Length: 78
Length: 357
Image (tube, rainbow over all chains, first blue to last red; front, side):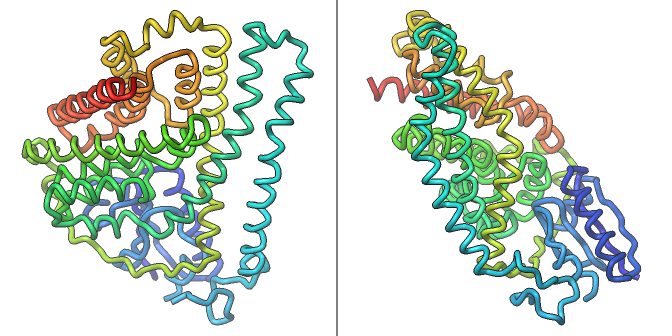
């Protein structure tokens, strides 16, 4: 079970990122819990400076802009 | 590492023809070539279209429509090329890398670096709050952070590209120089005032180590793709503003009498610069919408300094931006921000009108 957090205040890209994580997880058959973090203080606590951000099992793997689907797949299957 | 895409070991990658470097390089070269061929035909095309208009060319309506027909395709094409180029350049920068460069910098040099990096770092106003908090909590001085936040939205590729397209490189370069100076000086002044205590309390309490994200390796194709995505996203979003701005400019061009505008916004009326700034603050537009209006105003005899001040006030001091920043700054700090930046814009306007007579 992978614990994924999508960091973002609720912009269109954050939603697209969350969908991408779910899609890739379903495609790869990886069990995930996806949690959205929208609170600014909580987002800042992860030390990123641009949203959306992605945290997989406590490690920040991405910040700023829509990630590439193949990168999401790589993070989920790592 | 995913330096090699499309190898079988990477489960996410699909070997797909569109990812082949040759296709991308060839496609980009073809696009640029086609762009130049079409662009060279624009003036003959506009002349042809205007000649076939059912309205009198010298009438008010005729002048407006001609302005619109000449400017719309030209501006959209130039914008597409500029945004593509900047999209590729920006793939070399990220807010995290910029922050690492700025953290712990002394003021002065830090302000200069922040303003320059603000031009190149990808920035979206929806990301302004995380960026602000991310910078301040990682040890970027407050004034340096402000230099970045002032330069990033004001001096961007859309503004510079459109100014270049419509008013020539001299005006674009002037805008760049004054925009950077404004960001550097305003940030430095705010830093000197030592207002860290006027941040919202939760911002002061964020203690976050700046993360280092393993660098996502980008190939040439990825960078070209970043350029294409920037075009889709930015041109797709601002084209409607541009068309609206050109329409407003066209109305000014065709209907507003030069004598009137020259008297109000000409360089002989000293109060025109403060009036332009006051008028600009409540107006909200982005650079794309305001620049065709600027072009039309200049054509009617408005002074360049006054018009640039108006444009900077519209872009840099906007109500929506203040509402976003209110989440991290106290009202007092926002008031200081407006006062410092507004004074700076006034200075730019007066100086420019005085220098270029």
